Length: 235
Image (cartoon, rainbow, N blue to C red; front, side, top):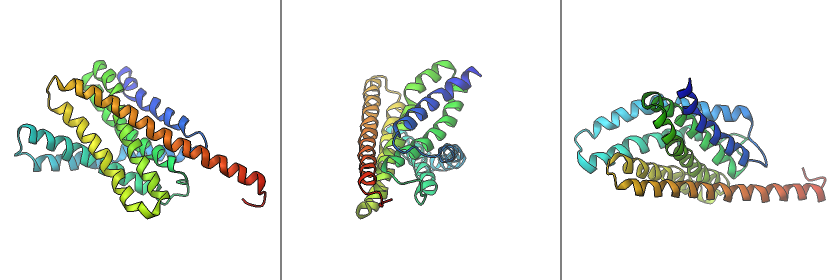
């Protein structure tokens, strides 16, 4: 039970933080639950796809093999299925009515996936693994979700650049995820310095993207309130 709690605690804390940041028009609880469940449900097809892609690169060795595992097996597969789940869940939903909503739903999908992954790793590795992943892997998945949702949200509201932004909503988290896994998988000790710097970069970039769209949501909501106040017939 203790290992289960330490596995899911960072997921709950990050989910709560993202929910708190969506302070101007919070998403329905049922939709947030569906987003988490979508992240949980994609774990099975992700595992199957990763096994197939891993087998396809079985002849690669050294850094080429590491790159294949990091970018093709893990990052490509996981971010592709997250993107598919996000698209199917909210692209045509009336609840998707603000750019920040993209961040909320993408992060919750990512956290659903990260929760399952984290439980499996922590049950096998114990408390040390749980504490380390609470500050690295789980927040990293969340930040990949923030990145995906940032561009996904803008794609909804900038139709002239919609396809370009949709593509960016996938390849940016794919690139970040691949770099993250590649540094870890090399097993080179001195790269831990680079890894810690990269994790810091992820934290900062995620916070900036959330702040940018959160501020835009504030000004949009503030404008709507003023518009209703001075134009009572405009609903």
